[in-house]
Image (cartoon, rainbow, N blue to C red; front, side):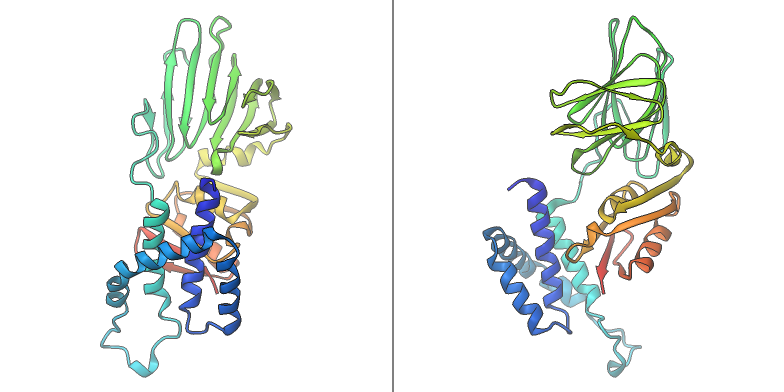
Length: 316
C-alpha cells in the first residue's frame, strides 16, 4: 500500500472512531462499520493501531470532558462530546500519520514561512517571488542557470540570456526557458502546475518529451508525465501575489491544503468523502480563519476549534 492509500485508510478509521462514539449512533452505523472493517486487512490494522493509541490518550479525553460548574447538568448542550473526541482523534492522527515537525526546505537557499511572501533578486537579473511555505535552491553556473522549487509556489520573471538557459526543477520534472514569466506550484500528491504569463517554456517530466507551453496556457505533471496543454486563468493563477485565494470547483482537501499555508496548525477533515466536495470561492489570504468559517457554513459542516493549532471540519 502506498502512502496516499495508507493515509486515506487512517483517516477513515478516525472518522469511524468518532462516529461510533456519537450518542446518536445507530445499529445501521455499527453494521456499516463491521462491513468496512472486514473489507480489507489494512482496515483492521488501522483500527487496531487506533484503539491501542486511544488507550494512551484516554486520560486526555476524560480531562477535557469536565463540565463547567456554571452549567446545569440537565441543560448539557447536545453533542458536547464532539469536542474531547475531536481532540483525541486529531491527536491520534498526529501519531499515526504524523504532522510536519520541520518546515519544508529547511536547508534551502531561500524559503518563506506561513503567510509570508518574499522576492528574491538573482545576480543574473531574474526575480523570483516565493509564496508562503515555499523554498528554492539556486545554482547560477557559467553555462546553465538552475533553480529547484523544493516546496510551495513561486512566480519567475527570468532575464533573457541565450548563452545560459534557465531551468526550473520541481517534483518529477523541469521547466526550460530563456526569458519569460511563469508560475510553478507543487500541489497535493506532488502534482506540479505550470502557468505561463509571458513568452513560452518547455515542460518535461518523468522521461517524457518536452511540451511547449505559451503565454495564457498551463499544464500539470506528476510521475505519469505531462498533461495536455490547456487555457489558463491568469488572474486566478496570480491572485496569491495580491493576497487572494481563488478556487474554481476545487476539491475541499486541496482548498484546505492551500489555507494551511496561511495559518499555523493543522486542519483535519473527519468523515468519509468530505475532501472530494467542491469549492468555488475567493478568500482573503490574510483572513484564513474567516475562510474556514465560510467553508463550514456553506458546506453545512461543523467547525471545531480545539486551539489555534488544532481545527477539525466534521460532517453533521
